[in-house]
Image (cartoon, rainbow, N blue to C red):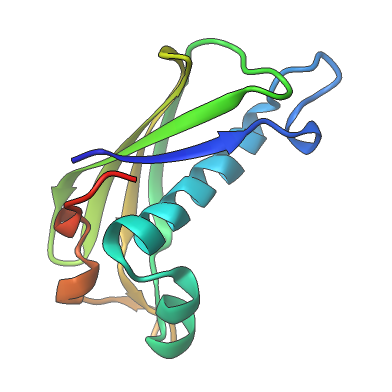
Length: 135
């Protein structure tokens, strides 16, 4: 199932033309991934990074920008795991406003032991394919 994270375009996200400045989309994308782990999978970044000593850094990112987004709009980030390996996951994210495509990205995350700096197998309760609810 697809996980939905809705975010409002804030003043800090836009440039002088009043549209989302493209690097801000990546910050919002990261927030949607963080929401996905917290509310879709059930393990938030505080627990993951603090108690478990694990991180999920982005190792690959592709993006396409379809239409501008403006201050005050609500953007729906639709997060869908596509492929999950031993320690990596490819996740597609489609960003829409009122059903109109604004931005699309493919993100590859790796489950990493923060202390050792190496990839590790996904813990069973953190595997992205474990998503079974939509928020």
